[in-house]
Image (cartoon, rainbow, N blue to C red; front, side, top):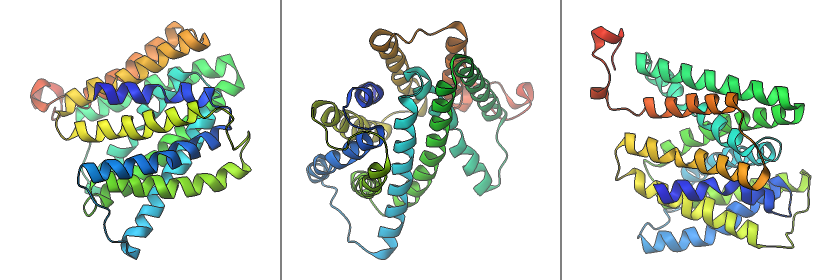
Length: 286
C-alpha cells in the first residue's frame, strides 16, 4: 500500500515534465501500460475472459469514464497546485458512498455525515484559496472536481464488472478502451502528441498505471480498511512535498487546514465501528 500510494503521488509531476499535451500524456499513460498489465495477468494467472457483448459494453463505458477522468485531471493539475489536484479528488470520492446509500435506500450514519462535512469544508477552503490566487487556479480545481465525478462513474461500472472478471483483466479492459477514447480526445487537445523525450510518459505509465494501481489493488485485499485509509494519505503528502520542492508551490495556512480536514474525513470514514462512540452518545450508529 505504501509503495503503491507513493508511486501514484509522482503522477502529477510526470505529467508536468512530459513534453506532450496533458490529454496526450493521459493517452500514453494508459496505452503504454496495457502490455505490462497483460504480462502481470499471466504471472498471477488471471486470464482474459471470453469477449462478449455483455462484457464489452460495460468495459467500453468504464474506459470512457476513466478517459474523461484522466483528461480532466491532467488538464486540472497543470492549472492548479499538486496539493489541490490530489486533495480535491479525494474529497469528491465521497460521491461513491452517497451513490451506495441511494441504491440501498439507507441513511448515512452520523460518522459518514461528519466525514462528508469535513471533506466539504476542506474542499471549500482549497477552492477559496485558489479563487484568491487566480482564475486559472480556480479553473484547475473545478476540472479536478469534474474528474472525480467521472472517476466515481468509472468505479461504479468496475464494481459491477468485478463480479465476472478478475482484477487485472478488468484493469486491462478499462485501460484499453480508455486509451482508445483518449486517442480521439488527444487529437483535439492542446500540445504535441508524440513525445521527444519518452522518459516522463514511460515513467508515468509504469508508476501510476502499472505499479501504483497494481500494488494497491493487490494490497486492498490483504489489509483492514483503516490501514488502507491511513496509507493512502501518503499520496497527497508526497504530492504536496513535490509541489513545494520542485515547483515552489508554497502551502499557506488555509491550504494546510483544508488539507487536514480532507485527510481527517478520509480516516474517519474508515474507522472501525468499535472505535466510535456508542449510538446513544453520538446520536447515531458509529
